[in-house]
Image 1 (cartoon, rainbow, N blue to C red):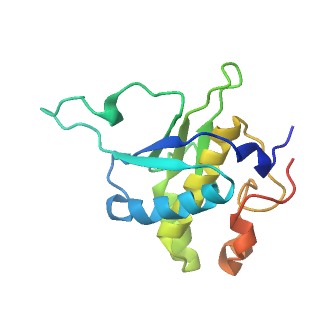
Image 2: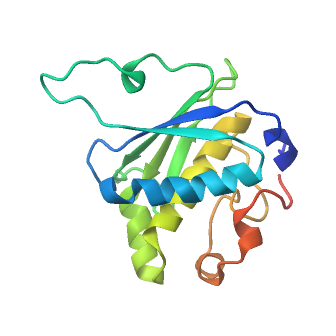
Length: 175
């Protein structure tokens, strides 16, 4: 079954932990989060963000980033794509249909940056859109994609370069 943007309305505030263990987007995380936040707020989702560094040797494991994942928390890890991942994928989300509690998304920083450079786009905005897409999957606990807009399976170069606001908001036809 598909999903609609109405599914997002009424979701309590969600906490999103971002982990960038390879420090691929250190300086860009704030701008990427702002883009993702704007997209998801349009869908009625209130987010609080925690940028979490992995602990260095000698650092303790206290604090919100090191506690067990809570019911209102999601995790986005930002890594390089492995060669086993499809060449067009900018990320993926692990969907758990059994527990109805999906919480882990992955975004491939190298692919986002390469796509942005190839099309002369703002990498921070594209990163935020990729994060919002993967969080969308987690929020509805579904790997389903829309037939249009930012929740479609593949973003064409034409879609990315035309940069129409409605492409980057919840809505459109879903499958």
